[in-house]
Image (cartoon, rainbow, N blue to C red; front, side, top):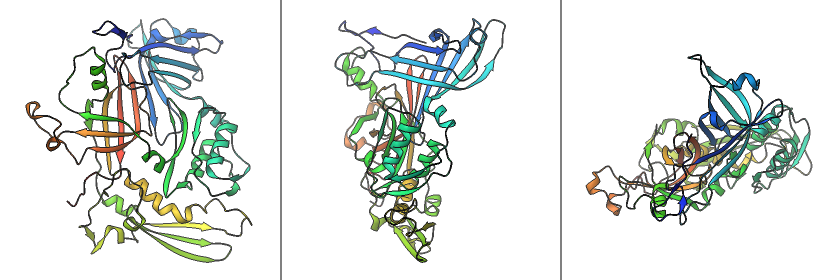
Length: 437
């Protein structure tokens, strides 16, 4: 794997392109308590972060020509520390340029011997708190806001020191954890965590550790970067201007799309019904959700469906029978506190709508490596219409306004091979243009 430190055109030291990096060390902690740098054995490193995953996963490809596997008696639960960095040129916009990561091996797989002189295999690495999670079960009562409960589990049960927990969830709930592991307990609480009708996500990023945050707060973040899909470059390689231009350039843009309203309508994206039964008072209530009247929080200003379309002569927001939700309440369970399901009473329909519409547009973009970009960031995309290079410019008339706009980063695959590249999943629930215009 490369060590790609170079010199700029003005003579200053630094990496001249954002796909360069230096693998400083990969420390393998053996069962005999030895610290062994296996950097020379590494063929490729892949790092995975996802907005729906409470841990980081890594896959490290090993080429072993010195019987390392046998000598260190690898068992598949050793710790591995990875340090990767680069030195960007002065004047670049890059703020973060290093990863210091600590993992444990979760699996050794894809072992291959196709000749007598070398063997290949891969380490699947995971965040250390995932091992802690596997050996604990929560069997205690709880009381407090969901944000506080999540923070307590991260600190006291998972022993995670690096975590950012949003505590905007105000309802005080009370109950008993039903003998489940810490991460499963958080996911269980997550089902009833809402912020102004938007759902919460529990995930881990490479830079900032565990995150518990609402979709509303993610949407209100500043745009991390504007990325452009253009066929040309304006600046000479080896300058800070060229570096900044390259780091904001989309190399590839693609999508399975999966765009359609058939599934969205059936899952209550635009209208639904909630049935609740209070076991204490025997009171039965029906609540209806309408996308237009509820005014959901969106990343852009225009909704993802047409007002000119109807099913059975009813507009999408009127299809309240399309999806039904059922929630049991018990107002008599605790004299002064709500039970576990209570927060869902007023917000579950709106939250489910947010989750369903988030997949309105899903794209995968290829970018040069960026140590600072992470899941949960908001980015802006500028795309030109399909055209020839001679006619391409960023004049307004050439901008693809429908695909351009703000997106939420929901997944990143960081790949360190010959170069540092990223495959970034971006999603949005709305558009910057009116689909009926």
